Length: 94
Image (cartoon, rainbow, N blue to C red; front, side, top):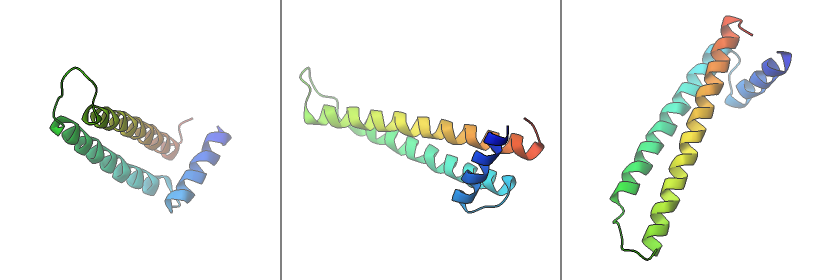
């Protein structure tokens, strides 16, 4: 588990904090921002007009938005997992 603690320490340093509780607060703020971004991408994707059978530039745009949304959701999941690691570390769990 020392490896995990060392990684968490590096993340905390990168976040500009010195303890698990502050790291959790920063991670939660980042999760909220990622969630808001995901919602904005979904609204944007839904506003793109649907086109006919041939793939057009607007269809490619919609596909790109969808792919970006998936990446934001993946990032959100990683943030959540990391925050849960900080919470476990704060409680002294292995």
